[in-house]
Length: 357
Ligand code: RAM
Image (cartoon, rainbow, N blue to C red; front, side):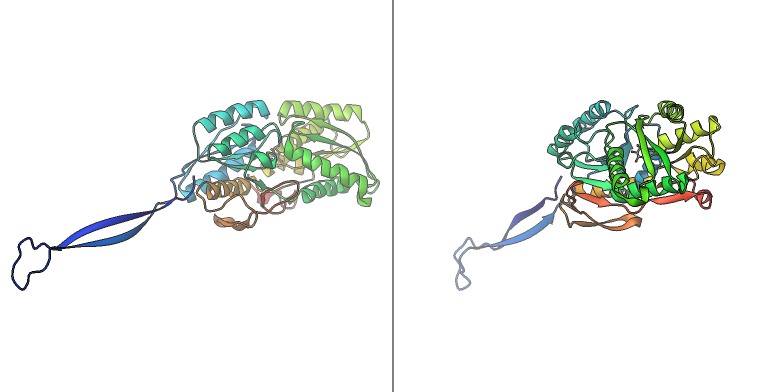
């Protein structure tokens, strides 16, 4: 799907005079003047109009909000972006879906990956078929995609969650637990590893003890049950950090239902509409998140820029993503080629009513 410039030489034969008879002084040889006109025809960028936004799974308001931003970008770019995902946040199901999208020869895929490594061969197959492969939210390892759209810096996401947990645990600190998405989720696993490293090395978190990390699979019921098991197993638990919008809402509901408000606090990454009641009832006084609509909006602009040849998958390439402005593709030793959206935002009782998504 690259720009092709054709130079077509059009030869115009113009016979200016055709003197077939030999005739006196004006007798001039039969003359055929060949005029050659070179005309450069620039073919329009290929009409790459069919793209697909692939979430980890369907039925998650975080990804549904992402799709709102993707459709906004699609409207601005005059392209079609379908929203297709598997029922559960499962890598095998996601690979089956992606294989069928590759067979349909779409122009570009913007994927939130359920597994960094398992999806590499599928991403490679898509790229081999000339499809632009961008990941957003949760990355395929660099070999299996062109560019990852990164929501915020890894260290920033880890630190913001530990800072909130630290504030909620109070001066004396105490036991904390992590309730994550699936055990293979590339984004959550990277954030958890960064939190573990900071807990072990930073003085500011020395009084926080991470007792366990459990997985709710981005499934509401499983997350709720896992939260309940944590209170039972650790009666002194102070804070649950859920770096997943599904897990944080389910954990806050579990704390509320178990009458543990004020005893166990929930924080992590959530969406304002899902968390409003828990901010207000005190089970989750603060949480953080970037705007998933902006993230997917940026993912669509990037995928389109790649598919149409406006940019190539190289560090230093720049492009404009509509209302979000100009972005540069950067390289990172671990994350590979990526585009960074910005900083996460902390939501609390003072600002939660300013947001409706
Ligand atoms: C869930 C998903 C998503 C993650 C957010 C914070 O919606 O796991 O991948 O980025 O939480």
